[in-house]
Image 1 (tube, rainbow, N blue to C red):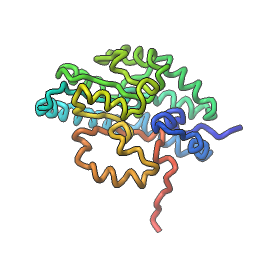
Image 2: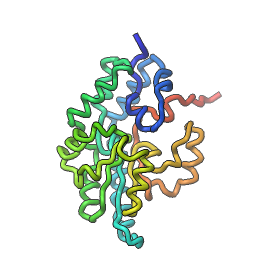
Image 3: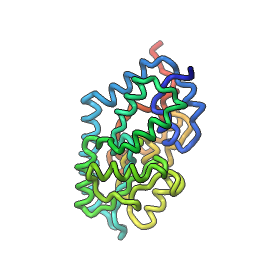
Image 4: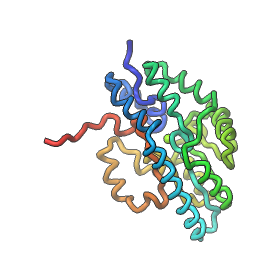
Length: 250
Ligand SMILES: [Mg+2]
């Protein structure tokens, strides 16, 4: 038997736009930390409150930025999808419960995406409706693969989210990296707000090798958080920090 289920490895691989297979293989076989991480993300009221809080702030900032936008370009917002707009925790929990070997996880993820049954993250729909009412262009920029485009659009349409189309849902494999997609958007629009659950959803400045490299960049860009950058919590798949050593007292 191979390594036990890790924290959503397919997404872990995709969101960094780098090969992280070797990192995934290093995940410990003790399942307990993953269960706690998934419980917190899926069931805690604090996470739901933080998601709502993020979107409440996003709505306020959006109105201000739209009002103050003197660039002559139409304002736009860019949102990540997984764990930002779409809640994938049911499939993460399913993986945990079934101890799915990471080498088989791709199939499970594809089935989940094809089912197009993810719920919206709390607060997301209300925010998107406000953006739509404010005549702000909405882009959904995700590292789901381009072959996932149809079911992804179907899922977003099922949730009755605004401005969902082939042109506004931009996935991995159609235009370069997330930063490439954002650059293309900037040619025509003023991106007034970026919303994501990973720092890289907000800026390519954060695509660093380690958490230690990310921390000073967060500090440098502190003023952007809660302003142009809106970050949502996600404990359920590790991205950069899954391998970080703890720093215990003594
Ligand atoms: Mg995400």
